[in-house]
Image 1 (cartoon, one colour):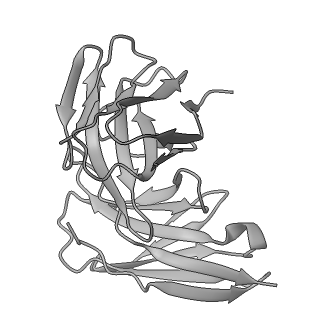
Image 2: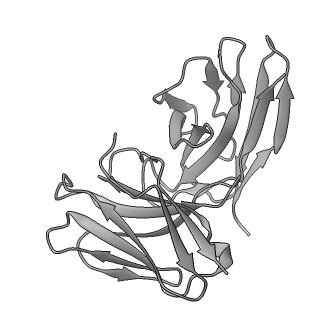
Length: 109
Length: 113
């Protein structure tokens, strides 16, 4: 159920901001945008989610465009431990999560 | 600390054998899930449970079975009918069914030898 499009891979220098894009042009009004990440051979970890407004927590910021057709996850100061696969998922409250192939982020020393 | 515990971390199975993967949570979550992940692929939903003594098939349930006798436990059995069982299996839970912010276990890597 490919409701999102993400680049397959990205690099980021350690200490710099990592900006991970996600396109979800067919998102409906009731669907939230969720971000998870998966470090190699571990279970995914919830990062953040939002509906319309920008959101920030201790891990990251989520910027959603006004038309909600795309969003960006921002890791403000990337560290080597942020190297992982990042999944962008859109879903309504009553529906299951579909984890696609995500973006493989490599933080470079 | 609350969380989900999956065991074992690595499991080897001979062809034709059934194996059971353990998943225990102490988060007091009602809903639990089993996913399968193949190399370079996303996660696919095998089974899910909304509440004790209730469970539903996901997208790839053939060759698998589950039980939910206790709120804390949701074991997955990989039967001999599963033709390609070698994969990474992940268990997850959430306060209610499909409610965001899943908590995942650390996974079990099953290899058929």
